[in-house]
Amino acid sequence: MEKHGGFHACSVFITTMSVVSALADVSPFLDMSYPFKTGETIYWPTARPFELEVVHSGETEDGIYLEMNNFCAAEHGGTHVDAPAHFSEGRYRVHDISLDTLIGPAIKIDIKDKADTNSDAELTISDLQAWEQTNGRIPDDVILLVDTGWGSRWPNRTLFLGTETNDTSLLHFPGIRPDTAQWLVDNRKIKAIGIDTPSIDYGQSVLFEAHRILFEDNIPGLENVANLDKLPTTGATIYAVPIGIHDGSGAPTRIFATGWRSDVPEPCNMEASGPSPFLDLSYRFKENETIYMSVARPFEFEIGFRGVTDNNFYYEGNNYCASEHGGTHMDAPSHFAQGRHQVHDVRLDTLIGPAIKVDIKAKADEDSLAMVEVADLEAWEEVNGRIPDDVILMVYSGWGARWPDRAAYLGTETNNASLLQFPGIHPDAARWIANNRKIKCVGIDTPSVDNGQSTTYDTHVILFEKNIPALENVANLDKLPTKGATVFALPMKIYGGSGAPARIFATGWNPDLYDPCDVVGSACHPTFDGSLLLSIGTAIMFVKLAR
Image (cartoon, rainbow, N blue to C red; front, side, top):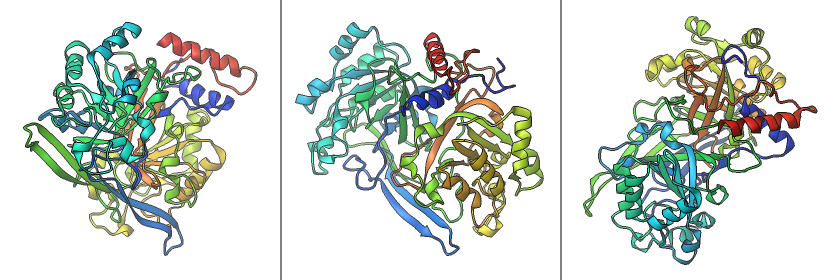
């Protein structure tokens, strides 16, 4: 089998998402994130809640439909990661945490029974020992998740926090005992820990000792994890992918699982050790660096507290604000197409899958307004074969080499939109893609899928009318192969959003590295004729052999 010289005979992603879905509407992905929704998403009583500000919703003066919003929030609320720096000075902040730390095999420890009768219940050493008696020793390099049943109370703030007030002394919810945290640090080797409550310390904690013990060892925490009731005790893989906030003590995080149902094949095998298989395709969100269009609110980072508290422990907490459309982000179809998908409507299946790359760098080097044309797509197919169904199509213009130089990247030092200069996708090419091929999503390494001089945003409109979302400001596309990689594009789950910051990464980008999503059988090619069941069975067999 050719790795990058020809398209894979059978990628398990294609089999899982195309073939299995043909039999039933079953996704291999279990979304374990709550949406960020004004007035609903639960935050710590003293934290700034999530607020979505509608900037525009309707037709512009030019007769173009446009949705666009800004948002603000604390780092620590909704489904999010606590970076170790949150409670441990000098330890990892969000941008320091590798993707490897937050992606891997998961185990679940269930303490629902005692949490049902005691809202201050805690995970104990004896709970861990009882789990091991049944399931064997907790493996190295797993993500340990604690299921207290608290997810059934979301989004009822009173039930979830244990109080109607903002008085933190009245908080009541389960957590993890400090001596249990210490036992894990001393005796086992977990990568990360998560829970379905607001905090890994229980509600009545004032010293947050479980946080401090785990974070001193650089073990991050996941909080407000959704749908833990659906996760099996063992056998699932967790992907916990935070928005890349530079210097953040935490960040909104999109979490999902595979291997959560025994009747749906596991698309990737993340259990192998060795060099990281992940290529980060995202720029960090950093104040005064992350590039936004002139009409958009830039990323703003406000340090809330950083230092030693009155209770004599170290603490960091921050707030942030931004437009949905800036940095590495996803445009939801509703951005330019009324009634089409908003961020919370876009399924994970749409944003995860095999990727192809169309390279227009040579002509972009000569013309800053170069566009992908139908001829470029036809030339790609002459060399590589027909663009397969259900792929993510990435456009590489070489523009990433200009980041974060705003003037070079946007083509102007001013805020005058009429002076913007960067490559894009020609409307005719967008129409050809939408009408003649079946792609899931499109991405580009520039600020927009329309080139800098577009005023009618025809490419956006054409793609979005077909509910094809767009990824913009995608990083490191020079490292992505023409074909053979798998892309994961994970936006912050903003309810009602026309776009959202996104964390994007790839596997299969380097032939010298293990590709966890390349589980292939030479006899396995998904079809929709009589060989369908054989294809599914072959895929499942290879997945099981790989694991």
